[in-house]
Length: 363
Ligand code: ZN
Ligand code: ZN
Image (cartoon, rainbow, N blue to C red; front, side, top):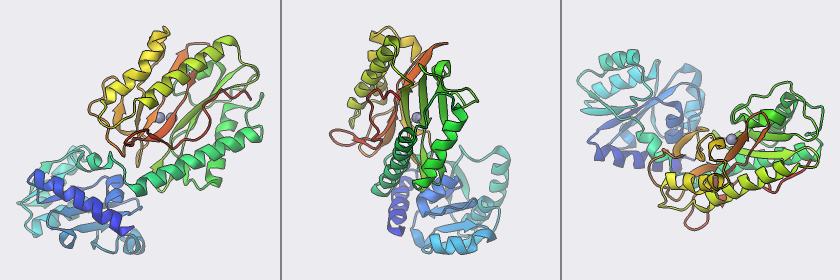
């Protein structure tokens, strides 16, 4: 949708003016995608403060046809490497000060950029585009909604077809989940799926192994789908067979903490206070030390992006931010529970994008 990208570039331009920059050299591929819609594996963009007429997109010959289709509205340069080629464009068109993504450019690459930039001053402008990406527009939220739906449906199918049963391995379950997400329109998994059974469920980021599922196990599934470049992220924890009292208690505690975290998602609230809302529930139950990570994170073109909903997180929530809420309590050697949804902060109640039930499901 070209209008969307025109609007995003205009938003970036107002940031350039605030910083007295005449242009911005964007080399991060996700940022290039955000600003142009280009999905290839090599590109850069020189956004000129004066407007799209002076803005130049660069990619290499492999993407001649694709870039003509995806970025028809901008001047295109077919050359590589793209960053230095656009630095030269900046010099040739007498750009005075150009921002560059100092958090993405290596020291060696900066030498080459400097060489090509001539009299154009290259100014560190880390995170300028990422700052815009924190608040999602409607097109992005729609992509996230589809990514969440693909994950929800894959999980529902997995359960319905008996995919979680004693004797299956963690790896088999992960593979089935990922295949089913593809069936529902995912381009791929959003990240390496976590399937953790029994004592493994107490490891927050356990990688699936040949461990078999056993009756009585807690089984934790953390996975997501990638749709149109956007990542969904969800976790559900199940019990195989009748839950023991400690499993039910643990589950109820994490569910209460997760509900408290979701309830705290309001525009204007400090991100650290959202973490505190959920963590307080866990601490009051005496399990503060077993909640081993932050409450959640932003999701979008990256699986982990700003804002960080953690003790040490900075800043406040705004309407339109897409975040996860994922408290977990992990009892080493025994088992753990995590419950995670992807949500959008709204004026009033947040919008839940992960729709799978959070009741304890016994399979
Ligand atoms: Zn997750
Ligand atoms: Zn997550």
